[in-house]
Length: 444
Image 1 (tube, rainbow, N blue to C red):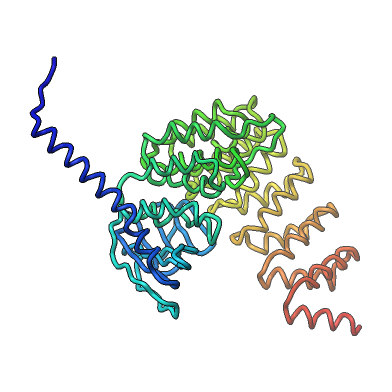
Image 2: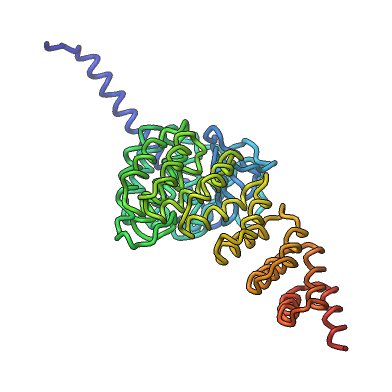
C-alpha cells in the first residue's frame, strides 16, 4: 500500500533533521573550540555524572563495582567512607591550543592552581562525553592509562556502548585503551553486549594445550582482550553474562576455559558455583583448569563458609598435588576453621612432605592462626625438613610470640642446625630486642 505524505510534513521533517544535525555538530565541536582558544595553562569544566558515580574530590572515583584511585583500580566489593555523589570535574592542561593532560575528579571543590586558569563552567554531559571520546587518541599514551575513559563514560550521556565497541575493535588504539573499553562495556552494558563480549573472548587464548592458562587481562594482544571480555561478562548487572561464561567454560580452548572459571567464581552466582563444582569434580578435565576452579571458588569477593566446607569435603578425593595445593591455598581465605584444618593436614603423615609443608605455610600466612599452634608443630615435628620449614614459617610472623620462639630456638634448641637457622632468620629482623640478643650472643 502506498502512503502519501503531505509536502508540508516532509518539509518540516527536513528542517528538523537539518537543525538536529547542525546542533549535534555544534555540540561536538564547541568544547573543542573553546579549549583550543584557551591560553596556555589549565582549563576547568564540569558536567552531570552518570547515576552510580561517586568520588572524594581527589583521586578516588567509584562507579558501581569499579573503584579507581591513583595508579590503582579494583572491580568487586569495595568501601570508601568519603565517596559521595557530585558532578564530574575535569582539569585539562593546555599548551598551544592542545590538551596535553586530563585529570578527572568527582565531587568536591577545585584545588587552587598557580597556572593561568580558564573556566568553561558547566557543560552538557552528552557534549562532554563526545569530546572526551574524541580526545582518547591524543591522551591514551600519557598519564594513568586506566583513567583515560573516565570523563567520557561517567558523563550522564546515555548509551555510550557503540563508542566503546568501536574503541575496543580499533587496532590502532593501545592495548590498555581497548581493555578499558571492554571493561566499561561490562560495567555499563546489559544482555545486548553479551554477543560482542563473547566474540572478544573467543578471539584470544587460542594457543596450544601446553600454553600456560591464566586469567591475566594485561597480557599482550588478543589474549589480554579475551580475558578482559570474560571479566566484563562477570560485571554485567543481573548476572546477564553468566550463561555465556558457563558456555565458555565448557567449550573454549584451555586458556579460555581457565579464565572463564576464574571469573565465574568472582560472581557468587549460584549458577556459576554449580558450574565450578562440576569442573572441580570432573576427573577428565584439564588439571590446570580444575585448579583454577578451586582457586576461583575460594577467592571470591565473599565466599560463603559452605563452599570452604565443600572444598574440605572433596579434598580426600583429590589425587594430584596441584589440586591439593589449590585447596590448601584456598583455606587461607576461610575465616572460620581454616587454620585448624591446615595444621591437621600438616600433621597428617599420610600426606607427602611437599603437601604437609604447603599446608603449614598457608596456615602460617593466616593471621587467624594462633602462633602457639605453629610453635607446637615445630616442637613436635620429628622430620628435620619439616622442623626447618616450621622455623621458616615462624620467621614470617610479625607477633611477639613468634619472635620469642625464634630466640628460644637460637639459644636452647638441641639441634645445632636449627639454632643456626634461627639465628639466620633473626638476622633478617629489624627489632631492637633481636639486635641486643645477637650482640649478647657475640659477646659470649
